[in-house]
Length: 275
Image 1 (cartoon, rainbow, N blue to C red):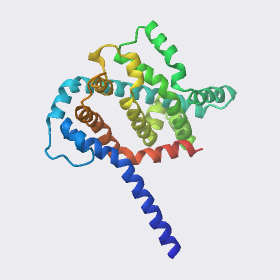
Image 2: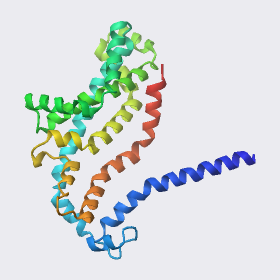
Image 3: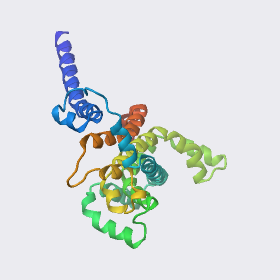
């Protein structure tokens, strides 16, 4: 009994330390976003003596927050929608089709997850330019779909195995074709893993910096992260302003993750272990 209490206390202490370490950079970013530049340099860890909302007003204007947020939302929604649609269909078909060809295709999707992005960065940029999609938010969304389907197919493939085939057989007896069976019977059952994939891909696409930097050339099409990067000058860095912009950028992610975080680990475990 004493040993169990000691173990529980030790785990609690370790988790508390981990939470404090994780939260401390967020604390520093928030409190310094309300300080003037001079006050921040005088004391980086103390609370602001006077709250300066001007940093947020300036950040709102300089990063063109509304337009940048709209670009990020469009790219995220198109990317997530394409990934979910393509990966759910592919994962379902590969899971229900037995044979060497199906196994080979599934293996190729999984193997592509091991290829680092930096190794395909230059060919991808040249291909986007040759296809005239470089500089387009819609072209960027298509690239995200291509890069994101492999992980989603892996999760859908495992999750579909937990769904009884009798449901599909009953639907076929009722006259449903393969697409009707999928969208009316199977896809509603994939909601847990679909929510997980949507959240993970949203966090990835929203916070991604390198791919938009390579693909977007017009400031009017910049994502929120890319617009924030324009605040970094070679000779002038207003860190209070930058931190305010970063806080504004992080707010949507924190809100969405707070509402849906319980689905993430559950969905990943279901998709990876089932079957």
